[in-house]
Structures are given as structure tokens and as C-alpha cells.
Image (cartoon, rainbow, N blue to C red; front, top):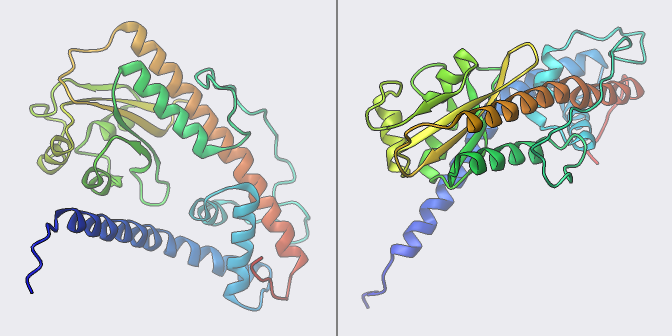
Length: 285
């Protein structure tokens, strides 16, 4: 018997399921080398009996401080080696108060909640520009470029294509390179894009975009927030530009504080666990 029922909906659902699997696989492949290297360092440093114990240390500290496993592994690798005789990894560290975010209108963001802060940054960006599509990226310290972390209103194809961008060929790359806001009034004609990037943006329904760098007090770009519009953009007002500059500065300084405080707290916690289990095993909770 022939099945005459339409298959469009089922095919679309299956395609989205496969895309989600690809996204998860890609994230795992990106994180795996970092985590493996960090495991090796921890196993040697604390004379742990197996790699599983090193992974369990990372996982426990990641969960305790709500720091992404990949980010924590990267911090383990890049941080200076602690004194083997010291109980603290960073005995002379200076603690700073969490920066205030004036664009957090609810005032309900939990201390150190990085995901909530990035979501608030994106919401404020879209409100100022009056856009329904946008994304937040952060600097990828391992590969360079920008890594997408938050998005709304964008197609799955767009998210897949721009999951990671380098330092050329997009407006966000230009904004990151110059640590300055970039407006694209017409995606179709602006020379900043490579042709594949232009096509991916147009397919998502974006006809114009604006990118704002998230910068530290010293002017270093640590992330990017971009709005995409379904219409051409004649430009932003000076009031809009000033408001977005404030968002970029506050968010960049908050991200720098997070790395110096929350991530370092997670490293200290990990160090304490490692010292307590030196020469032994540590299992996942």
C-alpha cells in the first residue's frame, strides 16, 4: 500500500534533529583536545591514578562554579602552574567587586551568571536597535576569532555557518579587529562580507546589521553583540550609538571580571580537590 500522507513536516523535523546532533558533535570535537590536555596536566600535577580522576576534578569544579567545562580546561592550560607546596593556586590575587550592569533592568541576574548576562546583553541590543534577530559571540582564546554563544530569531543554517568566525570576512570580525561599532546598511552590497557569508546572512532574512564590541577597560575586545534587521538600515542615532557603547563597555568589563574572579575561584577549588586526592582516585559525583 502506498503512503499518500505528506512527509514535509516529518522531513523538516528529522533534518532539525540531525542538525542538532551535528552541533553537539562539533562542540564535543572542539572541546575534546582542550579537555584532554587539561586532564593530562592535572593527572601529572596531583599524581592522580587515572585520566577519569582528572576529568572528575574538572567536572566537579565546573559544576560548583557554573563555569563551562571547555572554558575551565582552557584556564587550567593557560594559567601559571601553582606552587606544589602552596594551598592556594593564586595566593596574591586581588579580588574585585562584580561590575554593575546598568542595562540589567530586572536586577535579578544571579551573581556570576555568565549566561544570564550574555542574554541580557543581547536583549538590550535588540531593544536599542529595534531588531528581532541577533547573537552574542565571545573571543575564542584557543583558535582565535569569535565563538557564538547566544542567539535569537536566526535560522539553524545561520547558527551553523557562523558558529565560529575568523578575523576576516564579516562585520563582526571587522568590529572585533578595530574594537569599534560597525554598521552594515545593506548586506547585499557591503564589501565587508565574503560571498558565502553574505549568502548565509541573506538566506536568514537579514538585510542590515550592526555589531558592537564588548571591550575591557583597556580596550581589548572580549566579545561581540550583533543585531540583524529584515530591512535596510539608514544608520543609528547618536543616542543609540552611545547607549550601545555603554552596553559594550559594561559587558566587556563584566566578562573580564568573570575570568579574573569566577573562573579563578573554580581553579582554586579544583586545586584544593586535587591536593586532597594527591596520589589517589577521584570519582564523579
